[in-house]
Length: 264
Image 1: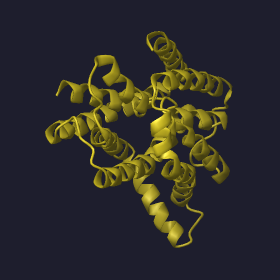
Image 2 (image 1 turned 135 degrees about the vertical axis):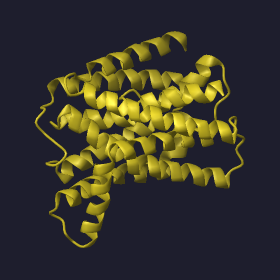
Image 3 (image 1 turned 90 degrees about the horizontal axis):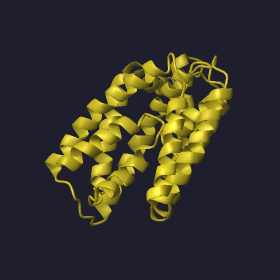
Image 4 (image 1 turned 90 degrees about the vertical axis):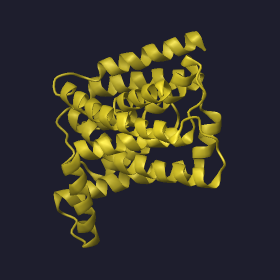
């Protein structure tokens, strides 16, 4: 049960902070000498954080759903329709690349050395984009081209250590979107992205006999803890970005990468 609690807290804290949750879920068992928690546990922890972002941004999520209905009615000019369109466009690259390349990436890039490199490189990029990017842009005024560029950047997050939230926030900041608005769009984008990844993972579980380290009650506990922790992490980040920058997260990524090179 201790492993479940630790992994759930790690997942909830790192899913929305730009520091890579997948990297931490890979590293924590290795650092503590625990067996790999298995795909079912990873999916459950991500589902917990999916619920947390859906709850925190429930108005935006509802607007996106209604916007999707507007698009079906060919009403393209409403704010909620534009939000739905931008989220949909941003999802396309990672859906395509993830579907065809996810297994290869899992087999060849899931190592501490890869995580060390990506942690440092994308920590530097996050700092530079945040330092030089303009701050007046917002989600309401985002263009389809900007959404597509953010979605293309999200593909890089398939590599452990890059961070889905980190790379999408980096891209948004480089495009001149404000800090809090960059985080908001990144988190809204996590709903379809994590949802699709979860469904793909479930399909893999149903078609492959994979032994699981954690029991069903432990996985359920992990879902609840990652949900509660996710809500707190989102609230912390959104409050932080009202008056502070991404610099502390960039510094953490660089320090983590250097530490990983030292121990591995």
